[in-house]
Amino acid sequence: QLFQGAVADQRAVTNILSKALERLKAFYGLEQPALVEVGAHDPNEPGRAVAPPPKSGSAYQKSAGAGGVVQLLMKIISDSEIEEKELMMDEQKAQKDYGEFV
Image (cartoon, rainbow, N blue to C red; front, side, top):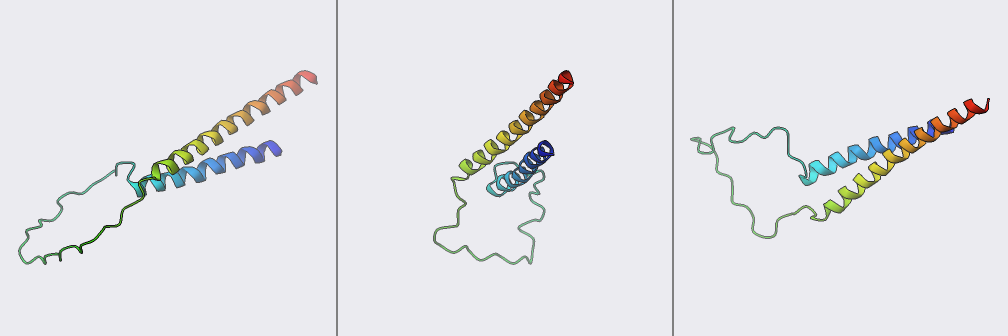
């Protein structure tokens, strides 16, 4: 039961952090979108309202330091997967040793 719980914990960590990583990549634009619609409407269409000019001043920018967070999550996910593999190998060895003992 201890082995099964530990493996389930590692799989849950991997699953949750993978979802968080994908969300961060999407937010910070670290991956290309699957579908981009360009030029769907003619900007010079007659009767179309003209957008007001943007306000002057500094624009909001996403943090340029996101790469460190993404790399940290990737490292934790990798460590979790390695831990799960080690648990599986240890359990198999323990079962083999028990089979030889009996």
